[in-house]
Amino acid sequence: PPPGAGGGGGEMASRLVGRILRSTLTPRNLAVGVGVPLGGVAAQAGYLLWTYQPLPPPLKPIFSGVERWVEERERDGGTVPPWVRGFVRRMNERRGEVAARHELRSDSNSDGASSRQPPHEGHADSIWSRFWRWGWREGTQRQMKRIVIIGDSLVVGVGCKEAPVMPEAICGRLAELLRVDVQWRALGVDGGDVRTIHSKVLAAVDEAVHAPSPQHSSLSRDSALVASGGGDAVGKVDAVIVLCGLNDLKRLWMGRTSSVFRRDLDKFLVELRAKVGDECLIVLPAIPMEETRLPEPVRTVGIYMGYLFDEQKRDMAAIEALTHFIPKPAMEIWARAKAKGLIVAEDGVHPNERGYDVFGEYLAHQMAEIMQSPQQLAVRASTLAFEAAAPAVDIDLPKQ
Image (cartoon, rainbow, N blue to C red; front, side, top):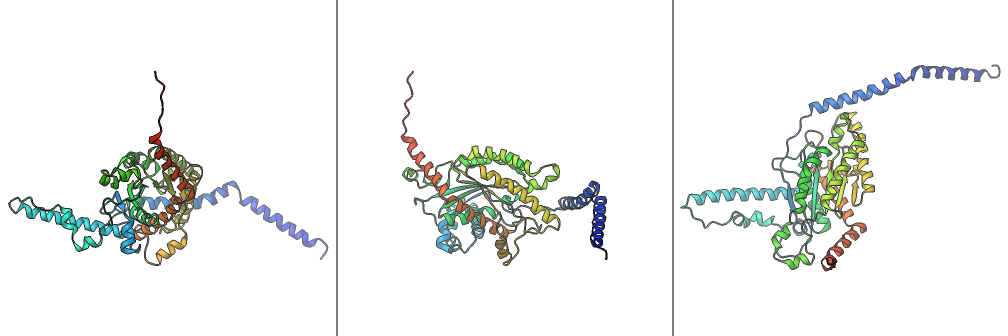
């Protein structure tokens, strides 16, 4: 062939390809190529939201409790999940209520005798109750952490049949890891986004902050115990967990983007911080969506969009004092859990009891590391030193 013939053919081919690309990749065609798939995802997401049948809340909602670390250490060595112990404890309470009603009916039929025992005393001596009795002895010096858990349907316990699992899973394991009792209060809004949670739970947070701890209510006559540091001060909350973001993501079609979510969350955290104080930890966990059974491509798009919302939490935690972000659990954690059984409820979105237990224990381990970190221990020590020195400060005001 003549010299340069091959190069000329290649040049002609490149010109032909360029002409085809210029005629094909027009702004209109690009918009159609991107818009059609996104429109399909939006239509699929809208259909799923429209046809979604929400699960009912648990049969017995639980809003507060105390997890004792002694019972886990002395009785079962940590082999029984905290939510199982909570279930057994509630069964004991029901047995006590039934026994009390039966005793009340018996006494009403026997000449109105008033010598019956109180219901809790009549039930306390049963073998079942003795086996599961809490390891609490009045007058023993104990430490207690106070945790408030705020959020959406994860806090309500949607997906659980008997009662919410998340608070007991978190605080039961946290009690074991920190070797303290953990008093908790759960404030959940089913289907709530940050704006709804903000408007509905702040009053309850204020109530939780000013409520005395159980050890102070039972040991208030022992002022020496309180003064010696046997319990935290009344009104002190050690940590607040805020579980949110999923319902904000569902409102993306209303213009509620991740940046709007951040502004809403910032407003909420400012008022929350004013309620709980500057020494309280605020924890913002990421919401795992990888194990949901949503159809593709909505599942993949939802995971990616959820990542954008979680990154807003991470950025806020990086600039706010004593605010911590907890990333999602590793996939290996979910894989080990799925090897033992299902972890997702019937709706394919919410966890079931096992899923809540796995996620709750993961959050407890992450929180224990944060609360035992040198930075947090230093903050706690300085706070205690300031509180101990405050009564001795004598301020001389000028006479008028």
